[in-house]
Image 1 (cartoon, rainbow, N blue to C red):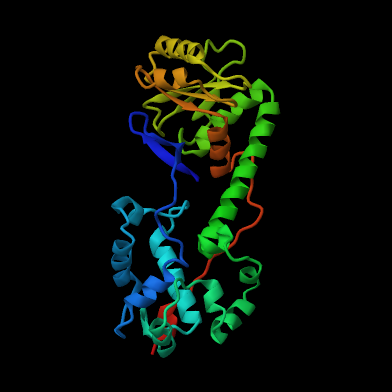
Image 2 (image 1 turned 45 degrees about the vertical axis):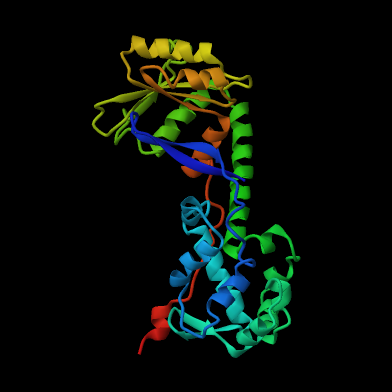
Length: 326
């Protein structure tokens, strides 16, 4: 899968998005964790998810990186999330039981299962237990999933929600990029200044950022203060192109920066950059950050430039303190 991430350019002082490829293959899905978790608590003792996490991670020989891996939103640890859902499903089936807040143990039904254990405990196996079948009956979203589908077999409900959210963001970004490419160059130049301001650069007042005179910019399309006091500035170049931006265009921008005695610049385009251009900016002074069309669209979505919130969903969990109150 391809995740969207952020890389902070320390010499410039702001974070810009980047893509990295991360193959999620070693972290077991939550169904694969059900039988190991049940075996882990087979002695009848009291356990917690936090206390069980490292034991199960060791069983699956997870690396330190895999143990720390988070969901795309960064809101939760992936392995911990899957282990918690495995516990939840075992509890719904009556194979484990809660003894007090955060603590659980194996139930008589769970012990009976382990007396003649199956090769795998999964949703299809749990369907034989009345409590789990009733739980599934009350959860239409679960019934709509078929055994072995990615949304049921490999990921938890929270992960499925995040995947759907990311697909919506990707589709929105693609639509935004299409509209930006159709806009005239002057509009695009103003757009990139608006985006930088939304990202927190500049300061109060009308002089926080500006577009240079169109047609006479000498390679500079916009100027924006890096901080509220205007102690340093970032120069912008905006190219509403369809063709790949190569090294020669970047060199022209660098020449314009030298002419301004500038230390920092951002080159934005609606297309993409050649490998030569990307390598070139790694070795030069001043520092130049490249933002291609997809990165630009993702930033617009992130900072609400040209988009607005249509609907908001809240994810709620049980308030254990409320139910434990005396």
